[in-house]
Each structure stands twice: as C-alpha cells, then as structure tokens.
Length: 468
Image (cartoon, rainbow, N blue to C red; front, side, top):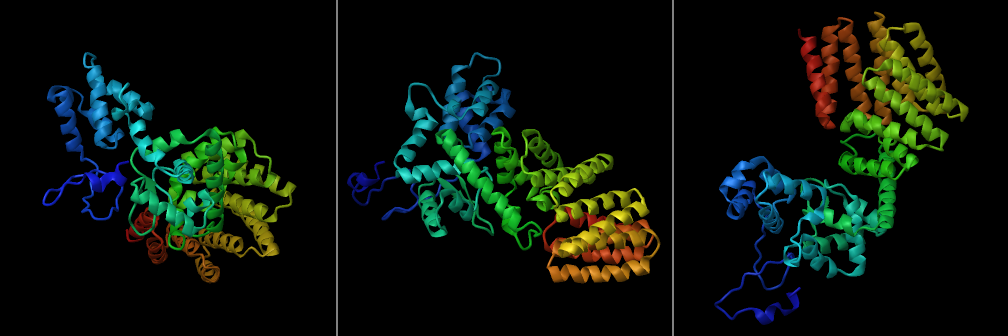
C-alpha cells in the first residue's frame, strides 16, 4: 500500500532499506525472492513460540499444521498464538489443527487484524481494480493443481492476449504462481485459493463452474481418441475434471456430470486410472437424472466398460444390454455398434466363440454402414484375437497386418499400441511365446512414446513371460 510513498521514506546513500512486498517488479530496487519456509524452519518457529516440550509431544500434529498453513510465516505465527490460548489442554496442537483444517477463517487472532489472514489478504485484494477482483475470484473454481492460460481465458471470456495481460498482473502481485515445466500453467498462491473461494458468491460459482465444465467437455470431446503424445494438455486436466464432477454432483446437475464422466472416456481409463471414482460419477449422474436418452445410453455403456475393466462381466452385460436398448430406441447406430462390440468382448473372454462372432459381425455391419473406420478397426482387431484363440494364428497375423494399416491411416497411435499388446496377450495364452514377445515389444515402444508408464510395465511383464 505504501508503494507510492516509497521514495519519500528511503534513507540517503550509503544507507539502504529492506522492504517486503508482494510486488515482484519495482523500478530502482534490487529484488530477493523469498520462498516458503522449509519444514524444519516451521518447526523451529513453533519451538520458539510453544517450547520444545510442547512441540515434541505432538510432532505429527505440528508437521500437519505447518503443511496446512502452507509454511506461511504469518499463518504459522497465528497458529502458534492460537495454540498458546489452549495451552492447558491435553493436545492443543491437534485441537487447533482440526479447526484450521475445517475453516480458513480459523487462521486469525480475534480483535487484531494484523494477525488475521483474511484481513491481510484483503489489503491486496482491495487494491485490485473491480474487473481484476472478478477475475481473481473466478480462479477459485480451478483445482489447486493449476490451470492453463486457455482455460483462464475461457473462464474470463477474454481472448488469449487479454488473459495474458491479467495473468502477468497477477504474477507481478504474487497472486498466482507459475508451475514451471514444459507447459504454461499457473495456480493461485498458497492459501489464496481458499481466500478466493470465500470471496466467490454462489451465483459466481455456478456461472464459472458451468463455464469450466463446458470447456473441459469440449477439450475431451476434441481429443477423445488422442493420447498424451498428441494432446498433452488434456492429460493435465484430471484434477479440474474431478473438481467439476464434484461440483456437478453437489449442485444436482446430472447431465453435466454425465458429460464429464463420458467425454473423457479413453483418458479416464488409459491415463487417470481411477475406476472407483469414475464409476461413482457415472452412477451419481444416473441417480440425479439424465433427460437426454443418448447421453443416458452413453453413461450405461461407460458403466459397463468400467465393470468389464474390473472383471465384473455379469454386471457389465446387464449394463450393456440396458445401453443397447436405449441406443436402438433412438436409432443411434454408432452407439449400438459400440455396445455390440463390447458385448462381443465379454463373450470372447468367456470363450463363447459362436456368440462373440455374432456380436462382432453385427457390430462390424453397423460400423461399415455408417463409415465408422475406428469402430471397424476395433472390431476387426477383436476378431483377429479370436482367430488366435481358436488356433488360426497364421490367418490371424495376416488379418492383423491389415488392421495396423488401418490404424496408421486413421492416425490412432494409442489404438495401434493397444492392438499390438492385446494381440501379444492372445498369443501368450495360446502358447505362441516367441511371436507374443515380438508384438509386446512393438507395443511397449508405442506406450513409452505416448507416456503411459503403467502400460509400459504391463508390456514388460508380457515380454518377460514370453521368455520364460
């Protein structure tokens, strides 16, 4: 606040003044960046305030409290003063920790705004222009993991240049931090995310959360079949996806939750890998209600996929048949074809060869009828694995070569890797170890390229099994 009067209070040379400020770029001064405290420094602060005996008696709670305060010196000092008020209690640190974890507003001493995190942050907030206050509040809808400039621009309804100007102002005022790394991403400064959330009205939360939900749905729709190799920005958005799913569930928005749980289908399975949470979102969307029949069918189909991924194939068949009924009622041939292919996968796993062939051929007919090359390739790949499992390895390899050519024509690198890996597993099951190792090695190269370490490990196990 004293920036305008700074030059009038500076001492003459050769004297110097040490000034603390959130403003990073000021003319005529030498700047020293201050990082947050280290854990041992935070412990030392508590020892100086509370004494070694008190800190030693509650080491775990002291460490958790320092982390909750984000090692902010003022927050730590406030916490120590609050604990001193309860010094006669059995576990004063743990008692205050519960209060601080429950409410950001607990980081204050009553009656003195110098020891009140909200009041201190108010000084910087109130100095902002009204438009910047609105932009700052809006950032509260993002997860603590951060956000991209494009996401911020969409939230603020600005072009990228305008959003960049706001971000630069916020960086200079130490309101946001750059996350570094390969991609330009930011997050609100420590504790400011909680402060901003308190400033955000219910109407603003709904408006901004709806806008962010729309942005995420569009992002994952655009990159539905992509991977981290050609759409790395999508791979960074799981925390925001999860936060918006939580908001949609709390707000009773079934259709928004359904979109958040179905548009990133491949990402949720291949990258984010949290099947329990994914299934919860899908089930919650159904419970809240989905008016759009096509979207409801997609949710039913996705539930079946999760159940199949979890080896609950009886339940998966029930879900797939419910989805199939809905897709047929609305005449969605692509949806019907995808479900028939999924049913065939369950039947193939159960070694119900004749039934699986019927399902795959019905799916193949529909995919070809509507010109869905991706679905056609997926079904042909499944049929090639059936050929392996029925002892027709040479024929399977010939068909598989055509499938890989289709994948490359489509430009679907992930599916090429998945086909190679699944083909390798089918060969392993059939005792064709040498051939299995060759295909698994090719799959491994692709998954390493598109940065899927969990599947790389899976391929390593397949390669090892092929050499036993």
